[in-house]
Length: 487
Image 1 (tube, rainbow, N blue to C red):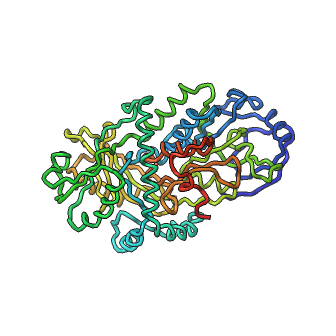
Image 2 (image 1 turned 45 degrees about the vertical axis):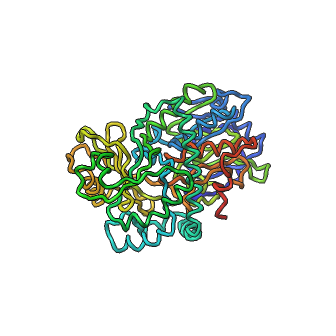
Image 3 (image 1 turned 120 degrees about the horizontal axis):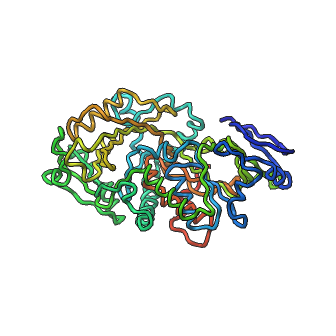
């Protein structure tokens, strides 16, 4: 999206904007005149004047959240719960949680978290050149992503602090765990298929296990629960592995981990907001945020409205929480957002083909894969490809992910195999961006959660709410997640 800035003063009636990427600069008087005459079109019906906002409580601020995935909806929920704001949630698709939050691995990894941007990335790069089937892939197409060279530069700086960055992720995941426990009191876990009891990490060589000892020792020092499982006990813990072609010498069990169906989880939170906060919560689907109205009276540091394909919506604050698309929106404001798309695959198959089901989340770090039972399906998530925004489902990868799962649980029927790919938005240090963007006094971001969006969404929403409505309480150090840490 190439951005052009234009000084434009509204006269008369303007309505039904199509997609464009020009920001408009107005003074407050012209802005109010415009809103009084503007028509916002939604569901093919015109809403006269500024009545979209007028349907909400006029005495309260309006906050717009852009993005209908698990991060965006979590943000909207926390703003509804913890502020008096009117909250308008924008989603460009006809349904929510249909991008990266759709058919992902669904792991709620509250203690078992690894960091992608680490010193090991150099090894992954060279191995990917040698081994065609290596789970990490780095392709030339990745370099054509905007700001990618800057991302790579900052990534190499960040890997020197990989343990510090993992600490930030662990802290955020721990906070998410507390928030998840509280959320289940108002939105029962049965609504989003919470099934797995713990995570079982498998090793087939002592060499691979010993390489991780330092990792486990550091986790134990943080107070995390880790149980070493001898080879003889692995099948008792996870019977579905009895058909495995592999021999495991050891397992590590993380008892507090679980999983869920991220799409159902997202929509459960959305439904709760619709029911609980109907007077000040609005949902707009098929509404694409394209560009912005900016106040020309205040050094261009305040956003007055968001331009969508259906019209313009006035606002007091705006949160960009749209995954990888956050990068495009911020580019429209001449804000460089360092997010790299990292492609991941999943395969879902009916659990009815396996009478034993899956009791835990099974993880194999060597192959960069995990699988578990989510509802009535077994789902395997695998691979990490730096390949631009390519979302094609490669036949070779389909065969590989199928083979990896069959090695663990045995053969399964060819019908009803559902493959999916998603683009994970990864920051240069694998730590999400949470907070205000300093260029604008009312612009906030909650993006860059990478492969851990399901895990980190609630903790990130808590932090962002604290930043937007400061009361002296910081659940975590807000500076650890600030947007400008690379500038």
